[in-house]
Image (cartoon, rainbow, N blue to C red; front, side, top):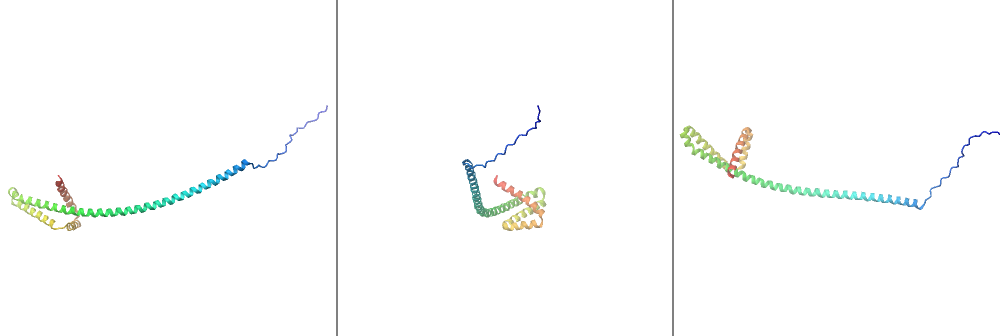
Amino acid sequence: MATTPTTPTTPKKKPAAKKAAPRKTAATAAAADHRTEAKTRFNAALEEARAGAAALKADAGDRAIAMRDQARDRSQDWVAEAKTYGEQAKVKAGDLAVEGKTKASEALASLGKLVSDNAATIDDKFGTQYGDYARKASQGLTDASTKLDSKSVDELGEDAREIVRKSPGLAVGLAAVAGFMIARLFRGGRG
């Protein structure tokens, strides 16, 4: 028997199937309609949000203007009140200055009288020379009291400014002594 050589056979290819064009069915048409409607609603929501943001911005601007105007009005009221309080404080300070001047003058006069009353005792214990010093000091205190009484608070203020201009070191020392004396006077008046 004769053998015939066999050749391998290659499988035969099947012809390619034709792709079918997608069919528009009712389901795909409905899905497309839903997408279009969703886009339309989304765009409408965006426009509404933009309009709301613009309205909020305008409202905030109006409120800021109203608050600024209100703050300006209040600040003007506060300035007017501060001026009123300043004037009242000025009057009160003037009254206190006059009262302080009177108390200081009385204190100087009392101290002068005390020194004068004790001059005779100083004569007896230390000699007439020291008694004369006490009398001169008493006279100086009385004169200072009289000068203080005769000047207004404004004149005293000008005198004080002149002293400060001429000798600032002395002015600081006098201010410290005067502050101490005034503190003692007012403390004595309360106790």
